[in-house]
Image (cartoon, rainbow, N blue to C red; front, side, top):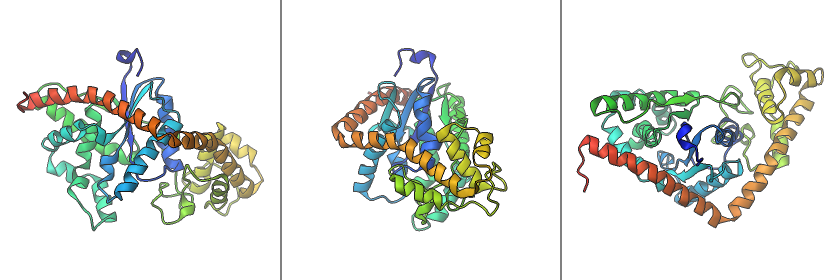
Length: 336
């Protein structure tokens, strides 16, 4: 991390290793992580413990964790400027989680909408980890006293719980934790499904044409964009309320070309959707190609990836262990 770390605010973000990242993961999160390195002291986490709330294939989870780290590195995160680590490699996360579980109220946790949503999605596995998931998320953040956390709309409730737990702990014991704030990026916060633009892009979608994987080849990318749902108007115009499909494609094209919505509208005026979809597909394929090449190069060097993660875990642990010692002392746990 930077030599001027004391002048920079700390920002933490994480992503679950549940398979190859989608274009939505990239635009909404990982793409911005490299940019944040200039302004903040950054900690980036492969959140493998959070992934366990849904049953995982053990070998696949290990593979996906390494792949996630490689993709984060390929997207521009510099391990010399940021701390990149796997959540389970820093035991302090689960240690603080227990303290927070004992300082969170049952009613608070039961009101979490994500718990209700995921319980409905996986009715055969409504486990305790799914219920206490927000307490672990609070521990992830407050273990490093991160002042900022990039959040999407679906995470604001969890951030509010983290703030409540921090305030309660500070009041019950003594000032320990900062009041973390959400950090909203200026663009690309939410990329929608190509098959149903009223829903968020997700790789769990049963329709493979609904999402772009960062490892999709050029032909696959262009084919999926050609099949993207739009409307019957034939006019390229930004209006998320009445033209969600076209507006989603315009947002993606804007991200990869830097063109404004007005410029995009003018560029495809009178051309219909065929030329527009082809241009979006080409822009995305061109933009992802260097990342894909770098990802393949990094992933082939397993020793390098593992070294980065090992050093990242050591750096994160140095910060986290100090916090755990402080918290344990405050709550009255005997330390020898």
